[in-house]
Length: 155
Ligand SMILES: [Zn+2]
Image 1 (cartoon, helix red, strand yellow):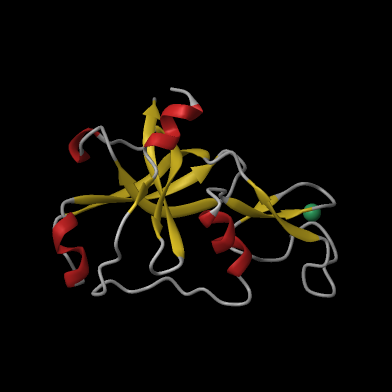
Image 2: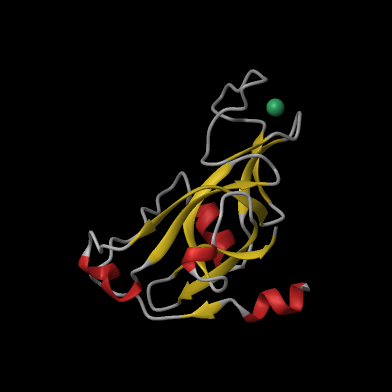
């Protein structure tokens, strides 16, 4: 698939107010701004290039004052399913319309792991650990934020 195909899977939607909202604060607002631009940003060390998510120190260097040599940099948005759960019960009523859905821990090509739902094909029962995925974006313009999800692109 090409990037052009990938962009067609990004969508705009209305937020279900029963769902918990993401916690956007001064420490992660740049990450959330990146999502609105359709960039999955990783907290990256300018000294050694190591990528982290969420925000933290680089474990290889002195980082005083806090993370002074770190910045948010775009990732490839590519990775693999590292682990996953299939949800058949809506533990929050805001998710009742979406069950069953798959919530996965994705190991990004840059190293960090990030969790989100798997969207699109294949169906839930064909998903497997190790499948290649890429980020897709779901925009909620009325709420002012965008969520990253992942779709399978191959084995
Ligand atoms: Zn470093």
